[in-house]
Image 1: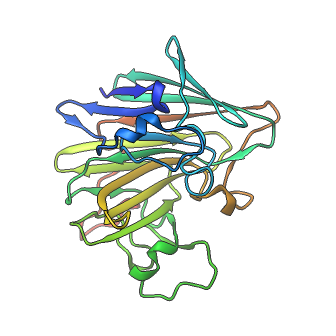
Image 2 (image 1 turned 45 degrees about the vertical axis):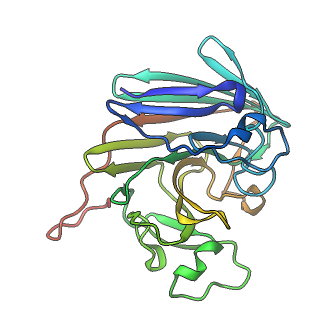
Image 3 (image 1 turned 180 degrees about the vertical axis):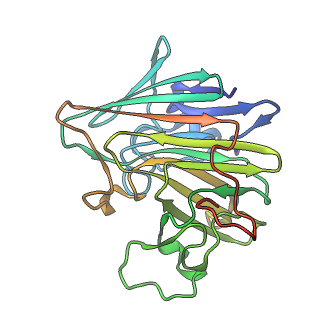
Length: 281
């Protein structure tokens, strides 16, 4: 079982995601987080932030992280500038799940990410389907052997090492920070003997897993280490960059629903050995 604690008064942030003997969410001191107001630059206190209708771009990390949520029974709700987002969190027999409903005008396009910053060791590994299309963004350019195409908002490679950049391993601090979006609804995190699986389900909408591998490369001049594993509706960080199939879109009903399922066990097949080939790594 997984236990989730949220803070509706301060943007609905998840402040705890705990399995037996382990807190999965990373935190950092940021007292100014509690005083944030709509329009403010994002304050990174860790935990899991609800980022919607964008992650990068404007508004910074979306429109709801700085707004108070209300709670009725098991459901928490926030009113954004152009939408309403409701969330119901429950424990399950094998973990926990969060069910979401976004209500807006038909045709409203958005990106949503469960911006989860995890407290992981340097030896942790991430597991998604081998060969899954993986978008890299311009901050990755100095880490690649290839020259970044002029003006390209992203380039696409294959998981787990798009364009030779191994994203499945974290490793020690090296002064780099890179984001990626992987075309997979499921990511399994392995850290020593501990496991955490995050899976996103949304009928008829683009689903992916965004990664933020910050090994003390951001922010300057006072960087810190943070690792984001972020189930996402959409395929880009910035809604302004989204093509026709890169963002979620509210249907004629004016309502869209999705589910984030979390388990404290790996839900993907074991990684391949040297003598066998499988589709996950």
